[in-house]
Image 1 (tube, rainbow, N blue to C red):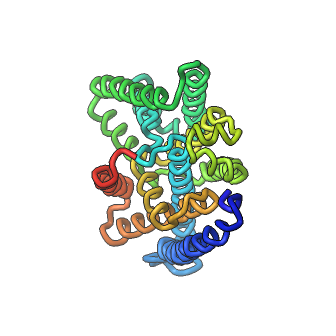
Image 2: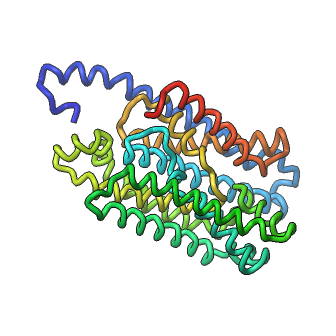
Length: 341
């Protein structure tokens, strides 16, 4: 699109694009080196068993599962949040505003409330996790389809309904949690905190398959995403069915966030932190560069936090808590400095 202007404007535009391209390339090189170092450190550091022994390979396999889980979660939140920003035209929102986290908490609380704490163990099977993902995606699809099919349906109404439903799910969850026994509440509380070590190698093939499929769709539509980012009026004037494209993007975001949430639990601000860092590093609005860089930045961020908390502070279970705390602070600082957009 940038090259479509008058010939006299082509040269300055290309000249201005050169430093942005080199900036993205530098981000890729630095991020790639950091990710490789962190992967090797996470997998090999402090494994004191003899190399080649059964225990050594068991520990290695466990750590590789954690690294693969981190890569999938980083892709889901990083790419999902950037696409969500494009669809909504607002960079301070996160997909959690649509009520996914609250719905996940209500589903987990309902299991304990109706079937007891032992039901959470049964819910760890691949079929149960896939079913939870399906329920969340169906919820999002029905909500989006219903709100977008009406004549008055627009994005602002959708976000408002998402906030209200999230509050409603949260209230129902709180009501049921107050009626649990202390032991059931402890088991539920441990589940509601996101934890990387809680994921299983059994989840990786289907979660990775979903990420590859969604990533392929988004990559094929990367030029359409650039047009959607111009706004509803401009993209409609360019011949794009803006409502249909936004609906498709929101369903894909719902799929990514649902997969991540059912794997390790809710993470509200992680995607916002990754997207903000990606915008600062890339300095461009081209989705062909933003989406892969977001997955790389997210992987480096989560791997770094996981390694430091696991081997320096011996508190690997707090990774998601620390990420959420730091992410919340970044969100507040960004909001105070940049405003609502």
